[in-house]
Each structure stands twice: as C-alpha cells, then as structure tokens.
Image 1 (spheres, rainbow, N blue to C red):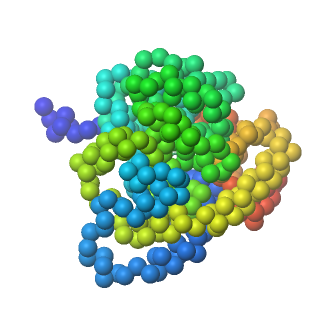
Image 2: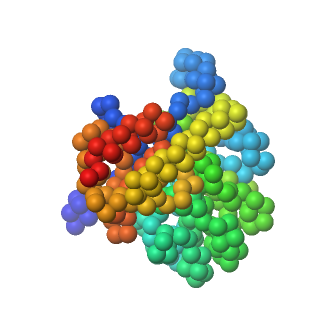
Amino acid sequence: MSLADNIRKVTPYTPGEQPQHKVIKLNTNEFPYPPSPKVVEAIRAINASKLRLYPDPDCRELRETLAEEYGLEPEQVFVGVGSDDVLSMCFLTYFAGKKPILFNDITYSFYEVWADVYRIPYETVPLREDFTFDPAGFIKENGGIVICNPNAPTSLEANMDDIEKVVAENQDSVVLIDEAYVDFGGHTALPLLKKYPNVVIIRTMSKSRALAGLRIGYAFGSRELIKALHDVKFSVNSYTLNMPSLAAGVAAANDREYFEETVDRVLVTREKAQETLRAFGFTVLESRTNFLFAKPPASITAENLFEQLKERNIYVRYFKKPRLSEYLRITIGTDTEMQEFVKVLQQILP
Ligand code: PMP
C-alpha cells in the first residue's frame, strides 16, 4: 500500500477557457446580454447583514416559483448549483444499479466524467453519421439513460417521437433529459412528465437566463424521483444555493418578458450568422441552441482557424476528438460581436 492507493484517480472535465483579458468570447455558450434588470434589483436588495445566516436549505421560494412557471408542484422541482451540480446529483441518485448506463458517443463530455468518478459502468450509443439521434441504440438492457436535447456540441435536436420511444421502452430506468439549450427554439420533453414516471428533465439558468456566474440549475420529475434526489442532496451538502443566487433565481424565473425578448434577439443573430458562414463555404448544422456547430471550408482546417481566431482575441471552442475535430463550436454573441467575428474570418480565410 502507498499513499497513492488511497486516493481517487479521475480524469477531470475540461471547461472552456475563461480568459481574463478582453476577448470576444464565443467559447462557453454564455448568454450575450445581461440578466434581467429585475435580477440586478434583487441582488441590490440583498441585506448583507443577513449573510451571517445559512440560506434556506429547501430553496422553497425558488422551487415554488419554477413550479408555477412550468405548471408543476414544488415537490416536482429540485434546484442545484448550476445544472452540473444537478446532473451530478442525478447520476449519484438514479444510477446506483449494476447495469451500464447509456448516453451518446457525441454529447456533453461531462457525462463520462461523472460516470467515472461515481464508478458507474457506461456504454456509449453512436449518433448517426450525420450526427442525428438514433433511438434504436437505447433499446437494450441498461441501468439508466442520459440524453442531451438539443445536443451539445452538435446543436441538433432529436425528434420528440424518438425521445418518447426511448422513455417508453425503458420504464425500469431513469431517463435524464438535459435541456440546457432547449429555450433556443427546441422542443421540451415536459409533456412526457405527465405520461411517464421515469423521466427527469434538467435545465439551467446559465444560458437563456444569462446567469452563468450565479450557478443555478434545476430538475423536474415525479414527486418520488425528486424526493430521492433531495435525500441524496441532504446526504452530501444541505446548503447548496447561496442567498444571492436564490433571490436572483426567483427574479429571473418571474421575468418571462425579458427572457423571451432577449432569447428572440439571440435567435435572429443566430440565423444571420448561420447564413453568413454558409455563404463563406462552411457546413453549418441546423442549430436549436445558442451556438453553431460548423465545419470550415476545405481551404482551412478547424484547428488552424481556431488558433488564428484566438491569436486575434476571438475565442471559439475546438474539440480535438474523433468525429468532432473538423468542426468548431461557435457561441452566438451580440450582433456587434458577430460582425467583428465575421470581419476577422474574412481576413483569415484564404
Ligand atoms: N449541460 C450541457 C449540455 C451544457 O453544455 C452545460 C454547460 N457547460 C451544462 C449542462 C452545465 O451548465 P451549468 O452548470 O452552467 O448549468
């Protein structure tokens, strides 16, 4: 035995870079506009002297607000420190069996990291050649399923009939549906919650609600599944969300008008950016997210373009992995940022 034998060894997830100098930042799918003015107000209204107290461990007000907004009961809502925390708790809670869990070969790369850290066996199910979702691979014995829809980093949405098929055929497994990007024109699996007790939907305020810096994520499911999630959470850390995040989350969830208006702006910018890239000879997948997954024209490799953009202080995301290495993932910024991005692209492209 040695010291090292007692220490857990894991290969961690690598988040996108957060450069501290001024750049055009199109690399981590943050929202390009500020959060709702009501969020700013809620944060200003926080009584700092109250910070000596612990926050509400049940996060009751935020859960009630989300329940009302989405037509559910508060007992069907779980909240956590970003959807990464919520997903991690879901892995720990729902994937305690011995059979392998299933997720796509190309999807959010954190899933395999949680499976590894919690010692959950897993198998990957290939997306089709064109990166579309194939439900057939999920019709086999398993200990749980995770589907990211719309998917990252491909930006594509799976057809809801295919998602329902996977849920219906796997009623002995929990099916997690990660809807981090659904607000950008995707279809939600929320209606499936009424029909199937094995679905859990995970959402975040980091993207469409412009609150990545506060870390607020949530999950919807049956009372039983959400109760199981709370039992695990209270066995790890009772006080997850801090007071400012709870207050801001309530304000954000209540401001539907600002949310819809700013998301619409991003969608308009996305359509313009998609057209421009296609005109430059890029292959751009049909995005239902706040980013584009695009393959540059044959005159330049994705890696080379990524490096050259970075040298000019424009950060996008490049994955040096099988099936992904010919593409770049480009977050939709403001119109001004996208214009600058296009201008720089014109300078770089041969
Ligand atoms: N799911 C997907 C698919 C994501 O891309 C991200 C962002 N990296 C997350 C979950 C986690 O987001 P957050 O923890 O900020 O809610």
